[in-house]
Image (tube, rainbow, N blue to C red):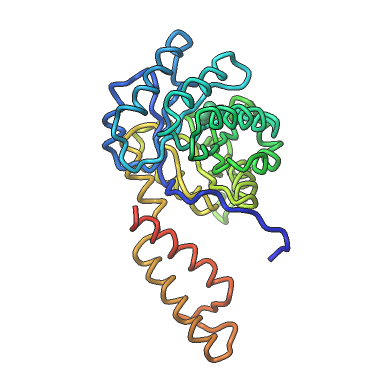
Length: 325
Ligand code: GLV
Ligand code: MG
């Protein structure tokens, strides 16, 4: 390990994160009853300019009055380039800060954006005597945010997670998309001709680089990388495929823009019984190996070593978090 250490973010289950427009209070109860890990009540892009003020009021009321159980509660504030943002922070933290766990900052572009909100939240917490420190979730969804993702990730002790906002990222980079979070058939490799002259088209994942870059910045700073929205909520297979790709890269959660996506995210982002069982067997085999003075042994015909222990521990820890939830 490096001599450099970092403090890991507050541990939370973040397999699924449900977007709920603040302008639609009729959806709040259902969100509170759902199996989602994190709810974010939105004041930004799901809310029209004329509804912003009412949405803010709805959210304050909902945080104070609805029983959200053990869910992690977040609000998505408006961007720093709008005049809504300061009131989103001031009003909601002042009036409902006790039940607020996280603030989601959209279109974050630089470390200074984070610093500005940190200062504001710190003053409100102090003035109100709030005991619990509110954490930050950042949506990496612009070319600027991606360029500065490393600095953003380390810009505040409040930072907990980075989210890939694929819809705005596509707009910002002028990517040619089809549906939000979907893949584009033009991002493909054409194989060389086979003996019979036929050629195959292999679709690629146009989001791979962006997501992988964000995962590295998040993990290098002890934060959770979370994959963002998948727009076609009637396509559960497409959602699961996207969630699996994100999980394979290291993401530990994915957004749900519709309640039907919650169970899918929870399932993909939870280790299976077989995986946990294997992890426990790896830990047992390595304990035995250590007792015999060996650094590496074989299990089921495969080499395992100290790196396998660390991977197994991550899995077992995640399973414990889920069981304790
Ligand atoms: C989320 O905010 C996105 O733009 O994808
Ligand atoms: Mg966005």
